[in-house]
Length: 205
Image (cartoon, rainbow, N blue to C red; front, side, top):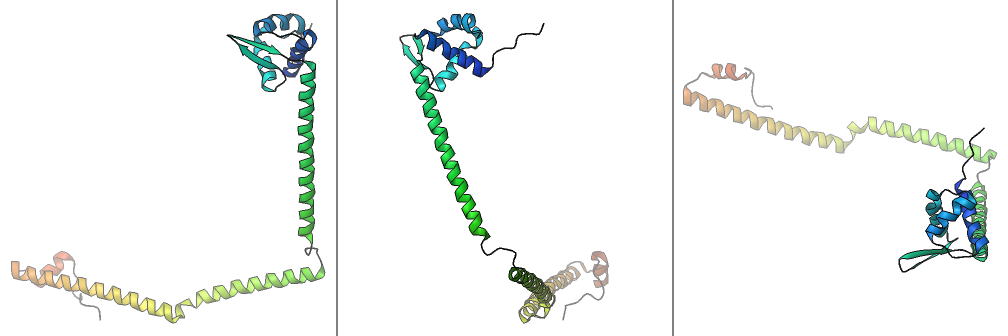
């Protein structure tokens, strides 16, 4: 024999509401925890959660009086609640339909002038050719950039700065060599060999 299937959450909520509608009374949680398992098959462990979900959805009213919480719900409230929910859904549906129509109109407007006509195809080909030509011209311009007077002048200035810097270091090396010869009596060839200075080392013209 197969095991009996338990109630789903929605079935529990529905049966819990039946208790309120049938008895038309005000209850405390402990009352419902006794009634629900016996009369509706809702386990006492799940009564609190089911009840709270109905309160959260405004389908059951609750009020704290002293140290106790009381719960009640009447068929008229459920009807009004469903009616409000239906009105909300209908409003959302109307809004969604209007948005859909607006999007469809925007799409139709966007299509204007974009039909695949012979003239449009011809213009598209011309545009592709012009873009290709532009890319080729940019490549040529980059190739001949070194002939640009401004670029040449910039290279000349950079070379001059490098040359001046190299000659300053050459001057410093000659000064150190002169100082070493006077201070320690070293021969110039020995200094060059010790510090790896080539024989042809000199200023850059």
